[in-house]
Length: 91
Image 1 (cartoon, one colour):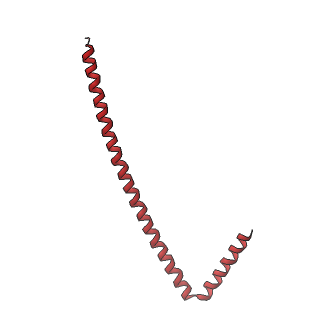
Image 2 (spheres, rainbow, N blue to C red):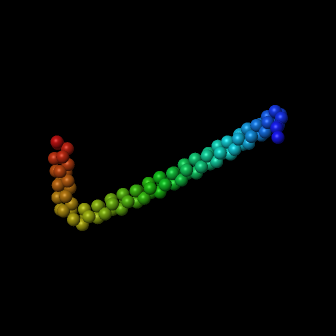
């Protein structure tokens, strides 16, 4: 069975149009996926940021409480940390 040149040309045009449509659909899907990935990343960053803020707030409160309850011990610890940092940074 031989096909004519016109049939072959028509088939090639149809195939080309189908590829264009498929490419356009893929492009649209990739755009949607990229947008969803960006939104997900934004939610993760916001959640991490909020968790970090809460952790820092809790740590600050704990340090303040410790300093108020044990001022002498806190002063000695701060002096020791300052001495060690000074010693390490001097080198």
